[in-house]
Length: 129
Image (cartoon, rainbow, N blue to C red; front, side):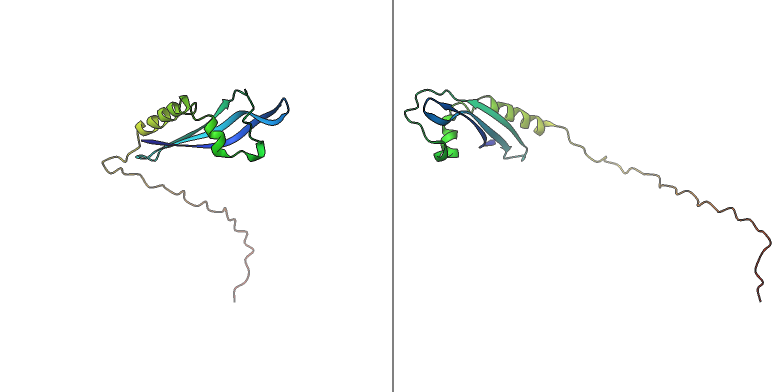
């Protein structure tokens, strides 16, 4: 089962008639998590609101995330959840790498022999007493 959460990320506002900061668009981060596999997916969805009768207008500073999300509740369960579900299903079905069932011998790395300095003997050696 996939559990979904919704978080507001941005609001677009405009002035309408005598009202300022009327919300026209809502951006929501929709996150889905598969409770069996833990795979998750997120996307940001934009919801445009119809600004009609402003008789029940709530001032911008009085808005809460719960109120704004309630405005789009009937719309938010559509294509976004389907897209997230499909993406998580794809992740759940991906092939995973697995170690070979037999031992693999790997040749040890061979370090190059150190280079010797080209020493020239000049005959000028100190006397040893």
